[in-house]
Length: 333
Image (cartoon, rainbow, N blue to C red; front, side):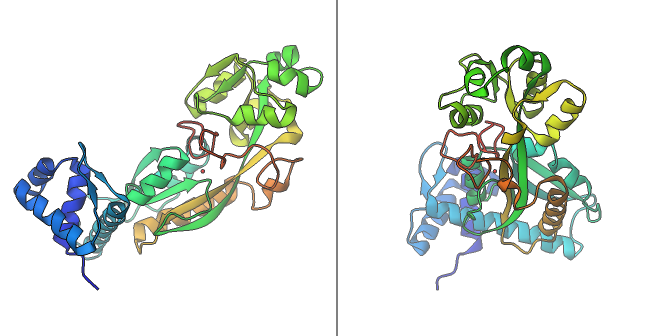
């Protein structure tokens, strides 16, 4: 089997990261001709076109495989240097993770705080939607992701984390004025808060309940914390993670107007199949915290016709639906 020369692999990664052959040459302190020759040699060796010669360049599907390998190789090299005592003074291990906004606003950061600090680990967190999360893993731009998809990205393993419960809630005054009587009649007319124009979660909830879309009176709030405050302030009703909704319910600022129609969204941890001590440490903390903060694997069976076992709203749905990995688009998982 032909080997993948490491200098060629690293060169391909440099071209992808820098965007052009000239910029990669400057970063590698070689000539643009040398960069071009290395990439061509690697393509000949693999028998695949690895780069689309656009500006900036883009890896092909085969190129993504090599780029991911290059990033994993760099990760292993850093880990080996650390174990050999070759890490620079104060240099920390770095772990990159893609995570949906609702998890980031509720349970995920506490997971990172429970990680032991020796050896020190720092983090690069990227808030992305489900489709982009998968692309980040495929391209090797992140080492792990909180996702709503149980289907592993090639080269990754998957572990179930539990289910995040979402409650249909509204400010107390709005609920008293507009959400009285049968919800199938009143909810489609009530103002609604949505994350952005791709957010279909509230619409899906109303479609299941009344066979129509949510009100055209919409307030767009593209942050998880801002979304919760907008609902509590009476700008419209919305679906909130239980962890965000509970303090506001206890304080009397929110009303759960359909408490028997909670939606449970299963979450998963995907990570590189890589023997990295730093990544293993992070995964252990994330799984342990999720077990405490999220509902168990059967949570989706609670509530009539909702959650992962029913025909209700799912953030693992088609493109454009609000899936939980992305409350950056509030369409995530």
